[in-house]
Image (cartoon, rainbow, N blue to C red; front, side):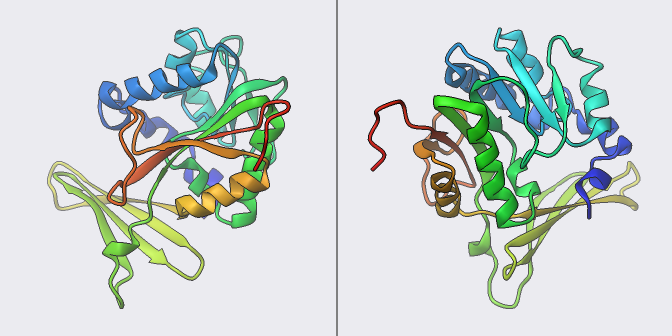
Length: 252
């Protein structure tokens, strides 16, 4: 499944859910608060900016935001909210595409680094982030923790969510560290469902930290969410902040 085929015009039209899901104020508000703090008065670059769920409110906070986005239909939806002068966007993939200028913050939200399906591409994404940052710059990743503890021997799938009108089923390939999310959305009758599938490469926090080291970053902080909750063995996801060294800083 090619990412451009997944994030087509139909997906772009259905992506935004104002006021609910990942667009809910209790989800989006803390995200924007924390990113504003981490930008530290400088410019921010969002890899896979999408329809601008985070970039638009972040720009409204006064943070200059630039985006990188592979899907032109997703970018088209962003352009209904903000034009090129407000949020400039470079079309391309987050592993290799270079945006003009230097930034204090590069960020990837809502599990998006897992859209890169090989370890090499994910390492390249870290290195691409480093190329955009000056000394002391930060790279922030929001990512889920693989649920392999819920996957006993002989079983290949887990139910991620089950609620009225929606079921999420994840199927795992533990050899390649791949998971395919199957999203079943039921119509009003409840008898027919729409199926959308998205492939990912899951990454453990420790592997992510090693990728960061290869790109010259060090882990500055890791929390369970954007509000700063403690990350524990039971946390389903994490927000990890990586930072390039300041001039003269020790890198041990």
